[in-house]
Every structure is written in structure tokens, then in C-alpha cells.
Amino acid sequence: MSAQLDPEEVQAIADAMAEDVGVAAPPVNERDFRIPRRLSLEVVKRLGDTLRNLVPALKRQFQALVPVTIELEPLGVREITARGLFEDLELPFIVGRFTTRGAPGWVVWEPAQAIGCVQSALGMPEPDLEQIDTAHELSFVERRLMARILEELLAPLAARFHFDVDDLFIAEKLDDVGSWEDKGAEADAHRLCIELGLTALGQTHTLTLYLPGFLPAEVEEHEEREDARAPAVLRTIPVDVHATFDPIEVPLAQLLEVEVGDVIPIAPIRSARLTITAADRPIARAELGRNYERLAVRIQEILQANLPPDETV
Image (cartoon, rainbow, N blue to C red; front, side, top):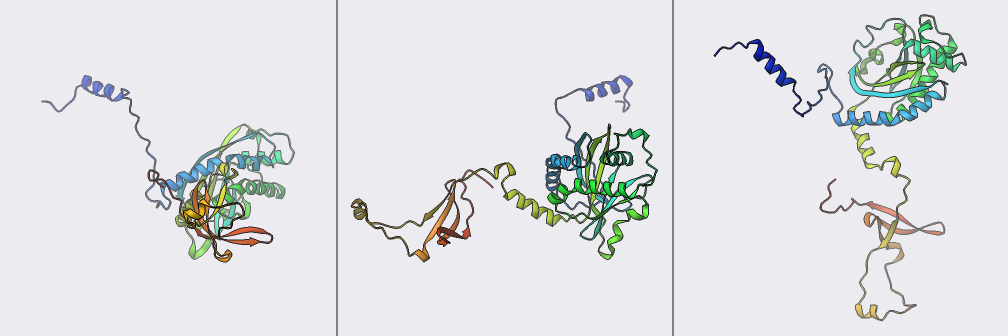
């Protein structure tokens, strides 16, 4: 048998491979193995979901200062290395530099869009981004307002992702941008990259945040704490909570003869133990006490929820 395929056989194989067999190939995510992965895939996914949920708040913060119609789209969260991050940076550029935990972080904004948004915030007519001179040196007012816009935009992210935005300023020269090594002996090139698609003044550009000091142990711990909390939409729903004394034994004969006015002793007031229940499930042990003129209970022990046998955590 010949090992060579004739053109008709090659075409037949190609046609067979091109047929839709109804099974979609799974997506393959690109990964640079030179960048060590510190966060689990599950954590990165949750951070992406968090970013998506933050978009309305980010949009409100931005439009509070910039009176133009905008759209924000979360593009993704990923880990990168800051080694050589700005080696190919060319003028003109707009980079907001800040520090968090003593390490430099950056937010990169397309120059024409950034300048156009600042001009709109200053009350100037809505500009044509194609006509903006991005090479001109920004005035003090323009730089300060641009920094303020970025600070406001980053505020919800900083609160939710637990990082600081200290000393943010607009860097217009490479020397001002700095390097991940600026922290000194404790410098770490690892960064969390957060990307947002910003549509403003008729153009869409990527607003990119490079966040330092994102340690996996802290992220995992924070995510575990968040999992234990009820979703925000459920936190205002009222739940009936009951405090129940430990049961006591009463002779049946005595119980059958009980009348109005009879007294059934429980336990001494100072040693009375109670069980706190919510939705008919015990959640804590407590003791009876008083808070000013009102009866109260002091929580002594938190109990694990008693799940039915067919439920798993």
C-alpha cells in the first residue's frame, strides 16, 4: 500500500474534518509558563465575576466627574509579571502611578480619550478625539483632574479588591513611570492585571490596571470569608430567630394536673442555658441575661448548621 495520499484522498479527509459533528471543542486558555501562577483558577474566576458586578459602581464614579455618555465592559483579570512591562512604552502616553503597600501600581489610559474626558470635565465642548493634540504637555489642572478621575474610578475596585491607592499622579515621562523594582529589596514583579473596555467620546479603548501585592493566601482567605456571607441581595431579608431553654423533665402526672397559676421551675437564672435557632436549625448556644431594662442573651458558642443527610457543604 502506498504511504502517499492522492489529492482526492486529502480533500476527502479535509471535508470530513470540516463537518459539524455536533461536539464543540473546549476553549483553550493561553498561558505563559514563564509567569508563575499564584492564584487558583477558581479565585481568578471569582475575581472576574467581582469585576463584572462592580461595573455599575465604576460607571457611576466615572460619570460623577465626566459629563459624557460612557460604557464600561469588564475584559478580564489575569496574572502578569511587571518585568519589562513598560520597555516598549512610546510617547505620548498617560499612566497613572500609585503605591499600594509600598509597591508601585499603574493604570494606563489611551491619551486622546483621557485628554478628551478631562476637557469635558472642565466644561469644554465635547471634543473630536481625532483632533486632540496628545503630544502637548498637560497643565497642572489637567493632570490633577485626570488623577482625580482615576482615583474615583479606582475607589470601588480598591474597596472590593482590598488594596490602597496612595499618591496617585499622572506620569508623562518614562522616569516618572518607574519600575516594579522601586520598592527595593522586597520588590516583587508579580502583578494582577485588570482590564476594562471604556467607550467614551465615540471611541473604545482599554483601561488597564496593574495591581501589586496581590498575595494568594490573602485572596483565598478573603474568598472563603465572602463565601460564608450571604449574597448582598439576601442580607436585608428578615429571619425569625428563637431562643429556647434547654428541656426539663416533668412527671406526666404533674403535667396532667397543671392549672393556670401553677409554677414550673426551670434553671437558676444565672445558669440558664438557651439554644438559638434560625429557620428551625440550631445556630448557637447562649445564656440568659439582661441589657439595661430588657432581657437579652449572650452568645457563648457558634454551632455548625445541622444539614439533612442528603445535603452536602
